[in-house]
Amino acid sequence: DVKVTQSSRYLVKRTGEKVFLECVQDMDHENMFWYRQDPGLGLRLIYFSYDVKMKEKGDIPEGYSVSREKKERFSLILESASTNQTSMYLCASSFPGTVHFGDGTRLSIL
Amino acid sequence: LAKTTQPISMDSYEGQEVNITCSHNNIATNDYITWYQQFPSQGPRFIIQGYKTKVTNEVASLFIPADRKSSTLSLPRVSLSDTAVYYCLVGSNTGTASKLTFGTGTRLQVTL
Image (cartoon, rainbow over all chains, first blue to last red):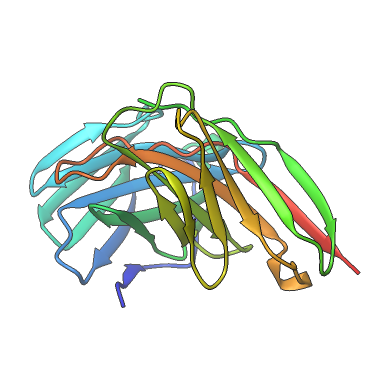
């Protein structure tokens, strides 16, 4: 079974902090994704990566950056956290065909 | 990039068949249609995938008309545990990454 692991299920940070969300997949997938999920808005794509050190902006990249130094790890970075970034963040990886998700990190910015 | 449109919510009684339709008018030739199920506090999980006509597995069926501009997920005899959000995803099945964009999903509520 494919496993996508997000480092934290719940995280509380303060406004202005630099926040790192980590994601690791164990199936050697080339493609990895970061989404955020808010009530009534569904899953919105922040960034995706199709190879090590390669990244593409999704639909809502503002206020975020990403890092992919190793194939199995994809990090989402909030450079200066703001309260409107309080959300559920979901990481995913894909092989042609299906997308596999982690269980999410619920991030609260106070 | 194929945008998808689904109903926001649906209600059903236990034991009924539920059909959820997704519109994807600008689906590309290489795109597959995949459906996901999401429970609260969990990531979405794969249900079924198809390219055209009909696909059936142990949990659902997927109907895709010839023009592929829509698809219908069919859940036979739903139970309370099928209460969840269902997402339709249209994307390429090739080796390069496609910008996999989900719609807002359909919230299915099953009651007794």
